[in-house]
Length: 476
Image (cartoon, rainbow, N blue to C red; front, side, top):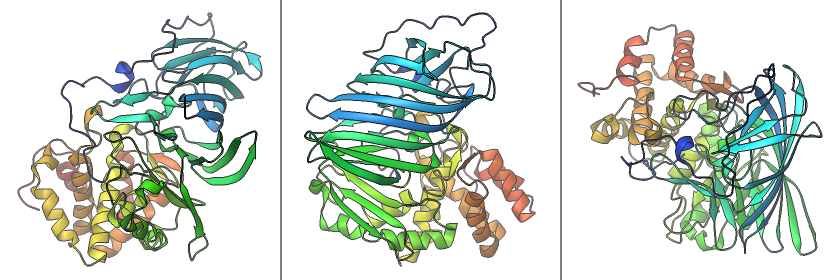
């Protein structure tokens, strides 16, 4: 994500974690009542060190079924979320993440459930506790005007209302602005997203478009994502889009949606290179891990967004009327995330360098491939940049997730690995790492241990200096 970090200037006035500071207009703020004795509750967070209230404990989601209707004129979103999950604890109650919006009827396995709201937590108390190992289905009806959320670094995410629709961007915890769920990268699931919009508008999401039907002045789009996806990678774009459907030479379906206001010649030329870029990256990183690809070029309100997002299958690029909205290097970065971030997804947010370091290194390789700056020169520039040494890439704060060290020092870790391992063994690592975590999660500790196992080399000193060290090494 965000190939030109940081997204926004870091704000010293925003040191608190997002989950502790978001406002939830439209949501009752009464604290959840205690569960009855003998009915333990699922935790109200997944235990992430940077975002303690993100995600939830006590269950594992297998599938989200979202049935949505949107009115661009009023900004009103009406939705029903059917969440299919397996209990990992005795659930007398459990939590879902949801910012704002008004919750209506909630059921668990068809029976009405009691609910309470506190901040971004929706607490659900089933009529009957869910036993460990049992599969259950929670259905939540909700409505309202979705919010934009402010991240600890001052940037914005969530639901961007546009003059003809909306765009949903979710990293790190923005998905809770438009649907309830377990909003943490450690819980990945399949999705079916059905969206009803006024005739003339298009609704674009992840995965494959299974159906498009119309009746009563509205058009319904049905999107299906079969491969597990983290909530932050879910996206939805509603508006006037020019859609191009095609296939790569290898037969992979492509779906590219571009707001006509951002459809300048340089953007169009870059998007035509998607098949070429995917083929090149597949040669480096292994087979493309999903069943479709493409891109969304949206037209966000000026001053909002301003960053690209690695949404699964279909990265989102901002277009605010200043061309080009997309260039080949940005495409390379976001498409590299399909392997590094979307297939092999961080276990927790402080591991985000595993996304951004690999994607930045992919850009360095592409520049050299295109006859531009060599990887050595890109590494030297990153090494010389004082901003890259503000903190170790493996230990950002919540306000530093998208700051230069995560990108530049993250890429320098890989540069040093290549020098230590040699080209053939390093190339093997680039392919073996995502393949070792197919549609799963991994941490920094998993990565360092994997490198040792794969290479048989003691890389302790390298990681101590480049991944965890605070001081800039004497030389590159």
